[in-house]
Image 1 (cartoon, rainbow, N blue to C red):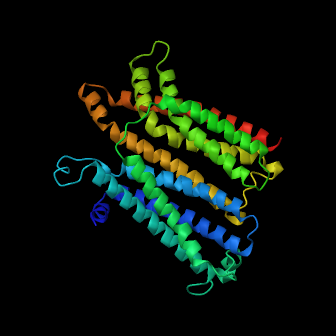
Image 2: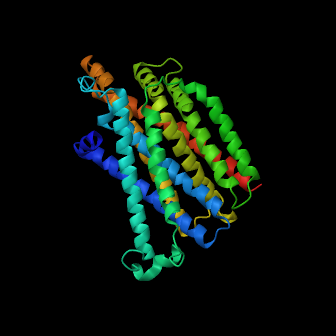
Image 3: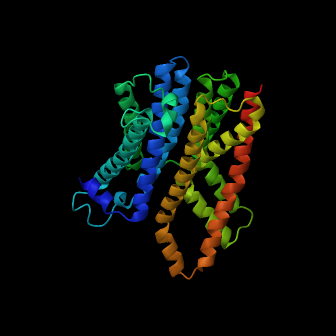
Length: 357
């Protein structure tokens, strides 16, 4: 009840982010139900479809966790400890809020899916969705509810793990593991058979590797910015980027993986593309993945902006011009773009070579 009251009293921008989580959850839930309908009609080949459908689910969970981290209701405030709202209770509030948003999205997905199948109030759009969703086949209710429960449950667990009090590891420690996982993902893609389960597994390993390597790469960008006799501006930008690396690194790595996938799809157009077996929902699923990855990075940037509020106030109190702070932010963004674009291009080239061997 407390989580619902805090959610109802939040600012409009916070409510908008929660609604975006619900919308992303609805898209992922609808895709899972589509795969279930395909499996009831054609069981053969349904497992690779389910693996590809888990990709939007994973980025939706990441987006939900990022939104929970920026929620003002999850930040410790003076006096809340006396009211019994310590870090553990605040984490519970964030977990419940995430579960509510994701459950709302799953409920919307189920309602739209049943409506398009004609199971609620007849066939809309002259029955165009009935054939696509195999309305002639009975829908397994237990399987549908299980698939729809995956997203709220996974997002809630991920939120609880992300917000629990724990020491943050150094960004450089995960960089070798990220490089190794990316290499493993490329190797799996090289030996994957078209349309099989190896393709989504290889892309998942590649994306996970880039996400693990992201904080280390962002930290290295900060070190590069302040190298070779830096002035005050580059020192400010580089040190800030190194502090922001643990928060921005993983979303940045996932966005690099999405960019590499898009470039690979463009490069492989003459070879059948990436051969994602999701039929007419392939393009909407790709758009959902790209939008969630971009929204997660923007939300993490909001979290960084909130965390650096005290530092900005201190610098402003010391007489630092606002133009200097804005220029430092531009330098940080430019450094990240200068590293991420070549990285995405390089991974896409290696992926294209692996898939056209």
